[in-house]
Every structure is written in C-alpha cells, then in structure tokens.
Length: 583
Image 1 (cartoon, helix red, strand yellow):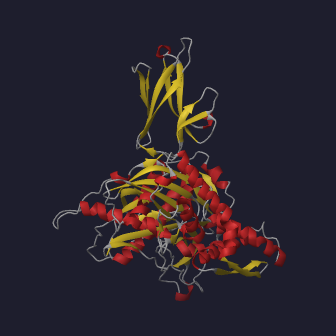
Image 2: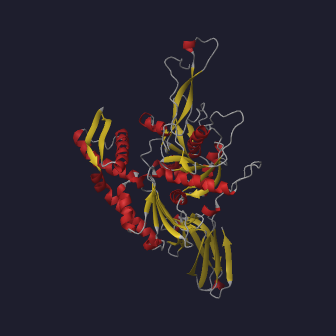
Image 3: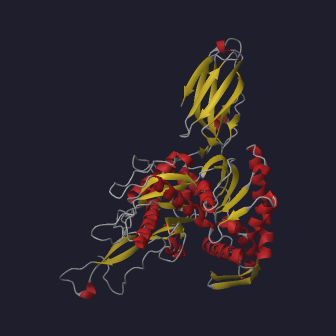
C-alpha cells in the first residue's frame, strides 16, 4: 500500500544546471528541461557553446560583444558534473480521498550539480560524479571491469549489450526503494541529464528555445564517444552543429581580442590541468583565428585531484593522532578529500586556509592547524615538477623545440594554483607570455566554443526574410584531431614498433623502409594500433600481403585520415607499386 501524504513536503528543487524533470518508475532516463515559453516560441538564432569536462560542465553564449558564461540556478558559472537519483513522493489527488489522506506516489527524481554533491554521503550508491569519465569505458569490451577497478566510485557498474541507439557497453545500476527491479542508466543517459540541465538554464535566462550548440571536444575523443554525446544532445532537442577542439577553444577565448597580424603562424602550447586528466597540446595559429593541432597528449592517470590525495595523506597523520586511523573508512575518506579540495581552491586565492571536517569519526569533528600556501606548495612541488618534466619530454618526442613556443595558455581548474603558473613561467622563460583565465579557468573552453559558434553563424547569417542556415556538421578549421593510440608495425620478434605516436595530429602520413622475408617467400606486414609494447595485445588495423618478388626491402607509406582510417601503400626500391590497401 502506498504511503499516505502526511508531513511529506514537496521535494527540493534540483539545482546545478536547472532541475531535470522527474521520471516515473521504472523508466529513469531524464526528460530534457524545457522552460515555459510564449505561445509562439522564440528560437535563439546563435548556437550556445558547450564544455563537458570530467568535473564541471559549462554553457556560454555570445552577446553584448563578447562570450558570456550562463550562470545556473545556484549562481554558479560552472556546474559540477554530478547526477544523482533518489525516490520522491508526489501528490496524487483522488476525489474520494480526504485532503490529509491523499496517497503519495513514488517516482524517480533526477538531481544535478551542487545539489547532487550535497546529498552524496547519504546516497552514494545512486550518485554519479565525473560523468564524462565513464565515456572512457563505454566502448571497451572490458569497460565494466576496468571501471570497477576504480575503488573510489561507490556506485555499481555492470555490463550491457550495445544497441543502435546507445553504443554503451556499461551502465550504472539503480536499486532505489520504489523500483521493483534493478534499473540501468547508461553514460549516454547521464550525459542527457547534464546537457538537458544546461539547456534548460540557458532557455530560462534567454526566454527562448535553444536548438543548436557548438561542442568543445578533447583531442582523444573517439568516434563512438562522440556519437554518444550527439545522442545525448538529441534526447534534449539540441543539435551539435559544429565541433571545436578544447585547446583551440581555450586559445580562441583568450586571444579573441588579440588577432594575429603576422603572416607567420604562431606556436602555442595549451596545458589543460583538469581534475581528472592533464592534456598538453601544441597549436599552430594562423591569421583568421584558424588553429591546427601539431601534437597532443592526454594523461588520464593524473589530474588536480591527485593534489587532494597528497593533502589528505598529509592530514591523515594528524587525524590518526587526534581521532583515529580513518584510512579504511570510505565515508570518512570521502569527507576528508572533499575538505582537501576546498582547501586547495582556497589557497589558490588566499595565503592560508582553515582545516575543519565536521563529524569525521564517530561524530567527532576534526580541527587541524591552518594550512598555509607555502606549506601546501612544499607538498605538491614534486608532482607539479613531474608534470613540467612531462611537458618537456612531450615536446622532445614531438620534435618541437622548447624555444619555438611563443605563447603558453593554462586552462582547467588546476591552472589556478599559483605554483603551476610560476613553474611554467620558469620553464619557458621571460620572453614567453603565460596566460590564463583570470576569474575561472573552467570557463575558458565554453567561452571559446561560444565565440566559435558566433563566428560560424555570423558568416552564414541570413537576411531577415530567410530561414536559419544549416551550420556545417563539423568545423573545418578546427576539425583537425590527433591519434588516440599509437600506430605502427608488428615486429618479427612480436614487439610493437610505433611509427606514429599517440597525439600525432591527423591527417598524417609517414614513409619508412621495411625489411621483408627473403628466400623467395611472401611476407605479411601487420599494422597495429595501441599502447602495449607487445604487438599482439594491440588492435590490428591492416595485414598486408607482400609478394616475394618485391625484394628484401620495400617502402611503406602509412597514412591516417581525419576519420582515423588507416591506409598503406607498398612500393619496391625502384618506385613501382606493389600493393595498396585501406582499412
């Protein structure tokens, strides 16, 4: 029998990027948020800019001669990328039921952003942070097992069969009290909740329907992951009209008022220090604000959250002395890490930060000594220096001289740390400007996407009596992507011989000389892609049969196009073509 409506108030409104509509059980996929609009809806003509980060999602729009970030209902300019599911009871009126005895019907409520964060400790099994990180596992046959290995995620992940509408191979399990059976929510549906919230926020501010967006994308995004984002946007009635790489968006946002006037291109290094990943990209900037990705590398094994862990490990000694050892207490460690993140953000703006965690252990509070910025920098210097060394090595491997970099752009939340800014200035020297978003570095990419949307639409702006134009499916100027996996040969000893390292901009081609079998025997040349040193553990791209008549040596021209398709052309030493194949 359903519970009666006694002392059951209306549920708190979901915050962050506006509340997603509740979904009646057992269907849990959130509906897109659509505000009240006039009888004749007003359609916003300029697409918005979207930035979907691992930790925050942001939406921006070009107006008042600049790109503005749209503030959500909590007054935040960046919405935490958190989605939570809870049970709520809604009023159901029946004519014969007294007013104080109306039955309350259970439904699934979707909560976004900061509100989802706030209820995390009491609803960990149904609260999903870092939604975008799940995309890394969604098209991996072993994705569920890899995701489960991340012990910090308390929610349950299971395998699912991909479908034509949703290619996700993983899903989050929901076991809410009112559900008769376990329900599954895919990364695509989680993204739809976040994007729907952002769209609803924009429509509420603009009092018009937003139908198109330009999306900023990381350089290592796969086609399957991009398809999932497109599908999520479609569920919300939002068309992704164009793409721009995140490094190019950051550069556009910070350099829009400083147009390049020289005919010589400018080399820019963009360092994105996000919470869950670090990316380093070298852009070549041309007149007309066209950006080409020269090389790019993404490291998903580290991020600014690792600084929280360093600080937490430091505080654990004091906590053990004053309270108890909480290192094996998941709930206590989550509360401690959340406090460490707050301390880190405070020290980016102030020279000291208080240390206090309410009810950390057995109802007892923890009050530590104030943390100074100088003490914090001593703790994190080894890691920051390691990141700088990685940047230096990346440039060396990519054959890009350090002195050829003419400008450095810092973006991502971690770039707000003063030590990071100083270290980059030291690495590149006084003659190279190091610039970043002064207010909130997480906004940079969204503003760049909004600027790109404005520039695209301005070029195609119709006359007053003409219909809105169709924007290009992708942005030709910024479509240039980079390889997410190294591409190379399977050696005779079973080792992987990389020819094009991960991060190489595409399209690309490379020519090498290969030894093949002698003694009048045909040979098979195998092209593989992956990260493993063992060729067999990587993905096969091409197997090329080379006839014995080709000789002991052949020339291989290996090409990868913008879609990631691999092709190869084999010629003999005299220049005659032996074979040409494509994936």
